[in-house]
Amino acid sequence: MLKNLKIWFYKRSMRKAYLHYCCVMDDLDCGMHMAEAVRGPVIANARKRVNACADKLIALGETCPKLA
Image 1 (cartoon, rainbow, N blue to C red):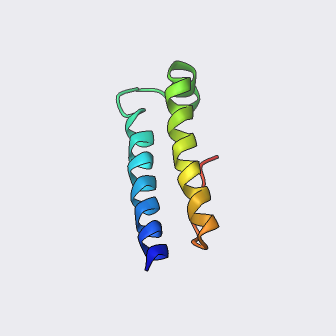
Image 2 (cartoon, one colour):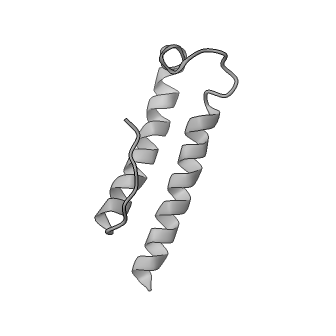
């Protein structure tokens, strides 16, 4: 039961972090490479949060993708 609750929590956290990662670049009219040049630290932190949640889910036995 506790494992299922942790999985739910990390999936929820990963979803929020991924949506934030996507929304950071919504107002820019350029490609990913230029967006990273303009907002590098913000995008990098958002990517780190998504990957941290993915690592925790993988440690619990779930399969999930990571951002490159």
